Each structure stands twice: as structure tokens, then as C-alpha cells.
Length: 284
Ligand code: G3H
Ligand code: ZN
Image (cartoon, rainbow, N blue to C red):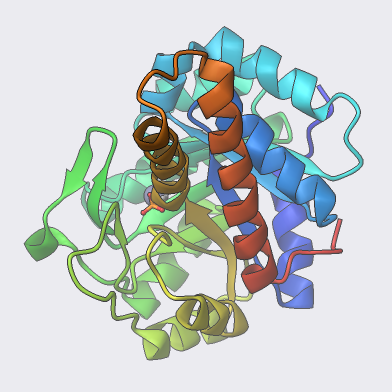
């Protein structure tokens, strides 16, 4: 398949000081809505699927749909497993053709996280696949993964350095105050922590839970060294809001193309907004 390793996309972003969206796909409309936006703005793209989304769509459908989407695209696209929960799940995705995987052992102890991440890195790198890992715990809920607010912990800069040295990971997701899902209040990002981590690690740094973070804060995070920004909930919300609006206007609506199509276009508009904030437009 015509995919590029995520490291190729992120290393350029790190060198040139911008960020690329790690945009989650949940069905065909998400995939089309996202790639249409990236193509229009000439932006590199990281399509990502969580384990929940993969089991919803079926991995063979994910591969076939992504293959169709990238077959004649002019932009670099990576396909990434979001929040891989085990060595086995990451290997399955690599075998099916993903060009990048995340191993998320952030809930485990530091040494267990190092051990499992290192194992995934060794296997993935042997076949040219990129690896993202997480250190610190991002709060909130994504699919069936929940981290209570009280259990969320910020990434410690010294540990981040040790983690990268010991694992050889390509991209590091850090916890600096964002959370997955819908925020109760306004998120407060620890920019000083990000700055310190980036000054010690000249490598792609990843921000999870970016939905609901203001454009101003996202742009500042990118300026201070974030190179991959994960967004899912914002797209789910605009897709569903558009469908709700259409049903409200016409309760007899029954043709899915008449509401999923506009839902897909609403995703495209939201993705374009994010791309402009992250500065990945015209970087393809
Ligand atoms: O890994 C995916 C993201 O961190 C998405 O988070 O749904 O809060 O945008 P979000
Ligand atoms: Zn995430």
C-alpha cells in the first residue's frame, strides 16, 4: 500500500516546527472527510484507528478503505494504530500493513512500560514501522480506556529522557494537562513542562486529547515543540451535530446518504480548521 512510515512525516514536522494531525477514523465518512481536507490543504496526514474503531469496522475493511483512499493521493499518508494495548495487537496491525503503531503501556510501571515498548520498537523497526509510546498518564476516556482525573499524572522530564534512551521510540506522547473526550472545564496545559521536555528531547512529541483545546493553546503547544496532535472527539461531535440538525429539520429523513454525506463534509471543515492551526498546510 502507498503508505509512508509516520517517522518520515514527524521528523520533517520536528525539523520545520509544525505539527501533523493524528486524526481518528471511525467509519468510511470519517476517512473520506479527513483525507479530503488534507488533500485540499496539501497537508501530510496521519490516519489513526483505535482498537475499538478497528473492531467496529473490521481490520480488513480498515485496510481496504485506506488503500482506496491513498491509491491516487498526492499527499504523504501514514496509517497508525492508536493506543495499542499489547505487543500482540501491535504486531497484528504491522502484519496487516499499518505503517506506524502506538504501544500504550502508560498505565503500567515505568520499568514495565520500558520493557514492552522496547520489545515493540525492536520488532517494528525491523520492518520499517514507526513506534509511538506514552509516558505519564493522559486522563479521560477513549473507547474503553479510562483514566480517572485523580490518576492522571504529568510526564516527568528526566524520566522522559531515560525512557527514550532505553526504548529507542520514534515519537513520545506526553501528559501535560490534556484529557481524552469532552472536557468538564477549560483544559490547563503545562507549557513550561512541555518546553523543558522538548529542550531535553529533540524528537517528535505527541499531544493526546486535543479536542476541546483552544486554537490559541494548540498553536502555542506546536510552537513549543508538539509535532503530532491527536483529535477524535471534535470530529465525532461535528458529524453527529450535523446529523441531529438535519433530523430536526426533517424528521422523515431516511436516506443515509442525505445525512452521512453532510456529516462527512462537516468533518472536512473541522479538519481543515485543525490543519491551519497546526501549520501542516502546504507541507506535503
Ligand atoms: O488518541 C486519540 C486522541 O488522544 C483523541 O483525543 O478524542 O479527546 O480528541 P480526543
Ligand atoms: Zn489518545
